[in-house]
Length: 206
Image 1: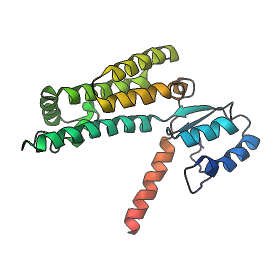
Image 2 (image 1 turned 45 degrees about the horizontal axis):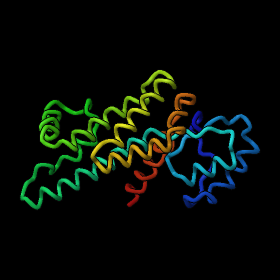
Image 3 (image 1 turned 180 degrees about the vertical axis):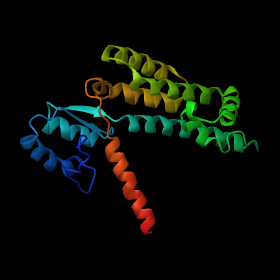
Image 4 (image 1 turned 30 degrees about the vertical axis):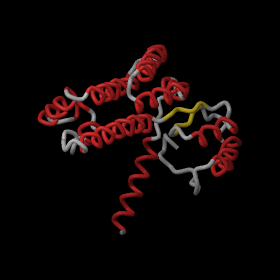
C-alpha cells in the first residue's frame, strides 16, 4: 500500500499465474483502486491488464533508469574489450562515473568523466541521453511529457549505438505506462526500499 507502506501480500515466483489470485481478490475488495506502480515485467503488466482492466499501470522510474544504466554498462564493457586488445586502460574504473547522476559527482570526478566523454563519442551520446531522460519525471504535465518522450525515443532509435536503440524501442513500446505517471505520480520506491532492507538483513545474518 503506497500510502501506508504496509505489505498486503507476498508470493513466490514472478509469473502471471503467481500473482493472479491476489489480483482477483484485490478486484473484489479494492473497488476504488486507480493505479499500480510496477517494473516493466510483461507478466505483471498482463496480469493487471486482464484482472483489473480499469486500473492504470505506472512503470516505475527506478526500473527505467536501471534499464538505461544497463545499456551504458554494456557499451562500456564492449569498448573496454576492444581497448584491452590494444593494451589501453582508458575505461578502467569508469563504471561509477558513467552510472552516477552527473550533478551529484564531485568536481574532480566530473573533470575525469568530461575528459573520458570527449574522446569517446558513443559513450558521450549515451551518457547525454541518460541525463536527458532524468528530466522526464520533472515535467509539469502530460502534454509536455508526450512530446519529450516521443523526441527522446526517436533520437535513441536513430543513434548508432545498439544498446541505446534497444532502450528507445522499449520505452516507445511502454509509453502508455510511462505517461500514466503524470496522472498518478506514484512509484514503487517503497517496495524497493523494503527489498533493500531485506537484503541488508540477509547480509548481516550471513
